[in-house]
Image (cartoon, rainbow, N blue to C red):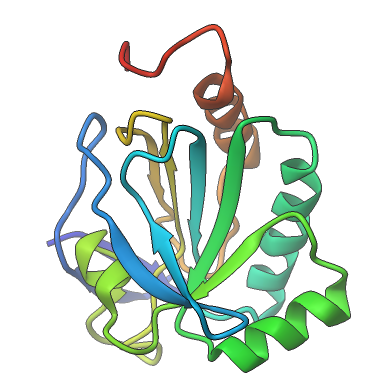
Length: 179
């Protein structure tokens, strides 16, 4: 079972299936801001940058969403999806207030299917039941080509590494089967 830290001291266990590079990204359903179903993972014919955050109502998560919203506007053949346990209404309000237009939001509040299938469900600590901070990049063929479980929940991911991996996953020079 993977672990991360919360505020440097508390060790938080993560529940669910631990995924590795080269694994096929599980297909799961979550709830979009408009209350429709949104599919995450699997083969979509385009890259997926999947951001797992505890809550868009925190400064760190909001900053991460703004940064990736800006980056998403420069990516071709990709979709960026932010997944949390926030209710769809709160996610929609956040996107409207922050001018977020280049990424999708997905709430995992109903079944926690994403958190369990991707191994990012916090099992203990003050944020138990929420998703840990993580990034998964899935190539057009559905394979995980990048994974970062951020070791300290209150820190942002390694943007440079994520964006480099996203650029590689969205490259039209590769069919995606070589990764």
